[in-house]
Image 1: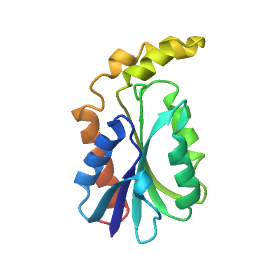
Image 2 (image 1 turned 90 degrees about the vertical axis):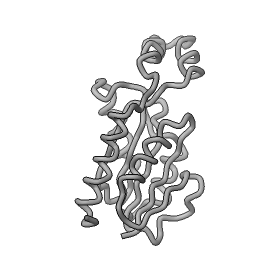
Image 3 (image 1 turned 180 degrees about the vertical axis):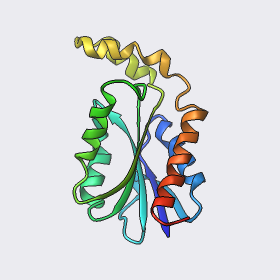
Image 4 (image 1 turned 60 degrees about the horizontal axis):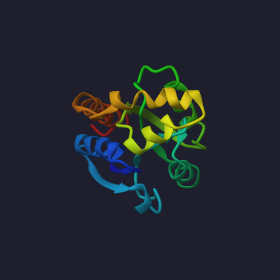
Length: 167
């Protein structure tokens, strides 16, 4: 089985999760930034990772999924600043699922990542009270994804590989 781990990461959060997933895969594999992936042809499975921006998949990731993942077997991994049990996370994940047209989704993983200080500052200055409230989560995100979350990402990768018949 040939596996691709592709990711979009602006602050390093999603890259760290991608590296954890990649390290847990015991098969022929490659890891690349999403911007370097021209096609999913030749891969039996693709782990695609990206951050959530404004409750939705990052625009570049959404375009990739819509244009290049059609008919492919895909496992998604997503980073966001909210704690995983935050009420809005389900909506974020549903927005990700809505980006999948004719994709065989074999798994989905999400975890909290560190919110960049520039984003915290922007949210804190917003006229939108919801944005200002979200800025208050900033300090709680420091150091995320932590070792526990990265281990959960490895477990996710191993489980997906097993379910796809690779182990």
